[in-house]
Length: 325
Image (cartoon, rainbow, N blue to C red; front, side, top):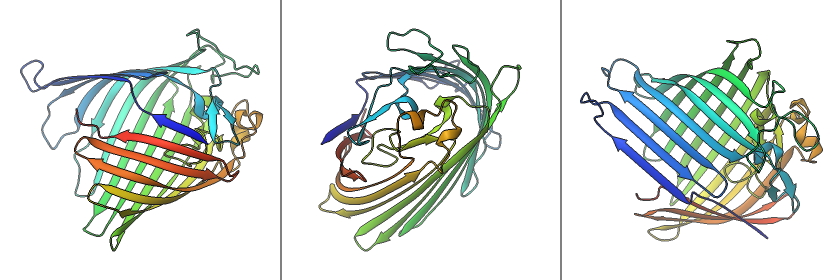
């Protein structure tokens, strides 16, 4: 049986509510894990409520690229490192439109610079099998991305529905920059069934145009198909993942859960440059089921899940969220 955990070791957050005396807000956050890090700087200027709210954002992240280039082991229940890490730098602006009663939307335009690195921190442009890691074939990819994100939310005492749609367009500012169109949607529905609560979620997406392997949709892992390692089900130009979970309160702070997850790359794995899914013998579709516990307290939420995949391999997941600062 395998165990999987995901959490940060160190975290720092600095907020200034009135930077220049005009209610300008500055947020700086830094998170450092065992193998990854993330730095985010956001500056927000106050504007009238009927106008779009502006945010200027600078972000840099470094993390292992396991979803696409990770190596599935133990009957796909775990993904080992493929020795590839991604350094991402983005600079841009977010415009959050005034929300209506149920709809909200955010438009952003950002410059992104992506560099694959090996475990020693050196820039690389090919994987162990000699296939390119970038769309350009160079040690880095550059792109300007226009993104539109729309959300719809509706809730009452017995149910809720939430829909999120993200559309990204790569703009060819220079001839060698990536041109693509990528969309992703998440639809969630929750229904109260007596003391129990049923949650269902459908996630899907696709990308057309230029792409690098790291832009593929990875399927498998916590938040996707439990019972599999991160990206161990597949990695493709398209994906579809369905999740269902039934929770039942055991006491005031503890809930029990049973769940069923399934996902597929819609037979698009071979359309990813270099076909990493085929080289790693990923099945392209998978199903996982299991049970778990949810513990809620004033200090945060603790989650443990026990999942079994289609190859009868068992995995135990631990998660922490909403920790009190």
